Image (cartoon, rainbow, N blue to C red; front, side, top):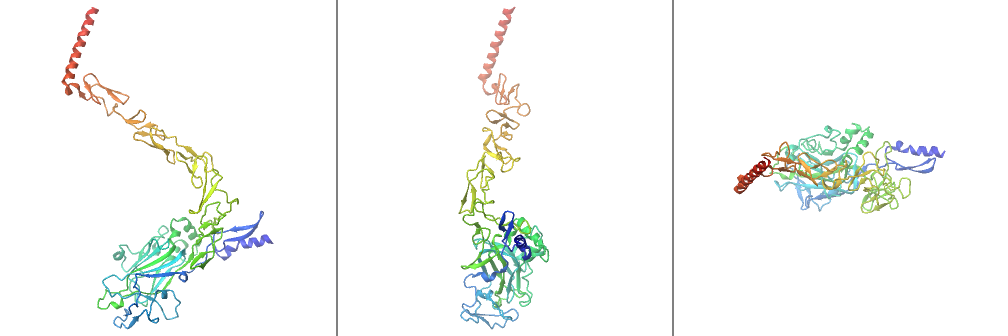
Length: 521
């Protein structure tokens, strides 16, 4: 009966949906124990937990009070914005309030009274937490959508920003980019930043109000139009480089660069109808918990993952104390359907041995790096897991990582090589003229003499002249009366004395030869 109950619990993740359950109590032949699964929190409305900032200072209307009008009634400028009057104020918090049916509340900027100076406004949303987008970002504008705007994202709590999407009524003119649609992207370009004209052209302020960042359309590239093939999406999120990070943010920033113009040019005689007004911003996503939690709660002013798998931290990004016998790793959606939890393990547990491939039995936790590293690697290995070879050694491609002979000495020739290190195939870096895997041979047109030196002479190109002979490619042996590297110079041309000396020497030799001949006769 207990086994049947455990089997039913094991099937719960499939019944409730993928990655909903982090662990279940199962019974095996070795007794009952926890079985871990990759898990993630449910998606929720992220605007309920956001902090909003609008800049530059003074961009919100009402201080001082000012009147404004709409594109539909451009000369009936009887509306007023007054920050001191709650009924006439339009502060940023109204972008996230609950609106009564038929009554829109909105944040509003000052009017474009300083035209032609640009009317620029930034709306920054911060969560102080990594979140993963699961649905479209939808921004609702009152009185017309901007003709030019940008959406930016940050992954480091606003320290650096990256473009997310460009919006313009003419992308080429505004951003020097061709207009594209998300539905035209492919599996290899699903995380491409593009410019769209779908949300910026004038269609009436009441008819078209929303601007979208299409998350679902990008998901549909992998999961199909109805998002039914989620297995394929999860697989691609793990395998496609940068795809998971593309849908992850800590902050979003809307840069409003030019307001709605009413389908025409700027009319300088009536600048009270040009401004920004945002009534709602919908962001749907889940806390990023690295697949180590299925709950996320709001604590002490920010979202916190309720970490499982012996992990801890705001994003479950490190192992708990006493569970650091192996380095922390994020969970994985693969293999389907339950993924890999990559749980942190206690010292001495079955999965908690030092991961050193048998080259060390000691490891140490480095807290500020949040990693476990092997200590005193043997067999000429090095690295966090003793997975690399020491300098002066290279990987034996025919040996497994746990083989004692996994690293082979480079044995570079000390004279012919630059140093005693080699690349991953065992080839050393040679000095000029040297060649061979160990730099113990010379290139053509070089000779070896405690190193490789360029040939002085040879039998092809560097020929000794005037009857000279080449000695081991190192020098020319010149006949009497000639000198130079290639015996190219006549001694007579250089020094008359040498010439006279040579002739005198020649005469003396002739006299001696005749004397010897006479004696023989």
